[in-house]
Image (cartoon, rainbow, N blue to C red; front, side, top):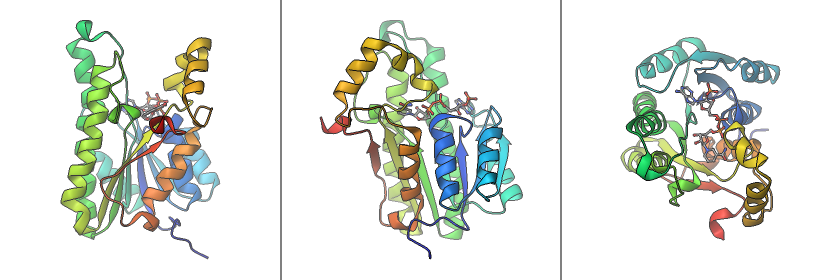
Length: 251
Ligand code: NAP
């Protein structure tokens, strides 16, 4: 029996699929029935093995997304290896921390290029394909710093605020043509990215006290939201950034 959340017969690109949130999204999409192109600079062998164990097709596509050089090849290889493209998840991202008075151009450019520029051009390349087929789902990974300012992370805040804006702009252009563009804003999720915060006893306690749900998010919490936004259950959702944050923004 199929449900509106069923993704059998769909093919998804997930960037940064080797670990953390990207891996969880790839596995959740595969559990819902999707085949996976695992795109990234570190080969996502573990993810691909787990997706195949679920009975879905999966392939690694090697790409360093710090520039847009590999963007068209990622699309071409996905279509060549998996034969279709229905879902794009722009998850790969980095963060650099320093006081704004000391922030370097290198730290500005690295974060903006990976988190915002490559995200846009992957949306463009996938969007061209999806618009031609009259259907597609794009999910960008935003952040609480798409809504809040943060501190000592100027390029990250700019990039993730940009991702939320871009998501709305693309929805305005593509919603009537069958392509949904939305974003997910993860709260504090237990991944490599946040390992230092989790290890800091004081910060860890302060963060958990501030989260209404009283716990860190699990990467699988983001996977569930991605399945929803990738599915026909979300056909009328456009340009939205969905916070999956244990209630952080409600506080
Ligand atoms: P993570 O464990 O550090 O994973 C980041 C992923 O991005 C890795 O797969 C990484 O690949 C990939 N990546 C980074 N630069 C890349 C590049 N130049 N080319 C290709 N892939 C690249 O972090 P995460 O927590 O899962 O984060 C995933 C996304 O969620 C990011 O966009 C992050 O900003 C966002 N996010 C996370 C949290 C959180 O609490 N964890 C909260 C809000 C938003 P490598 O392994 O090769 O570096």
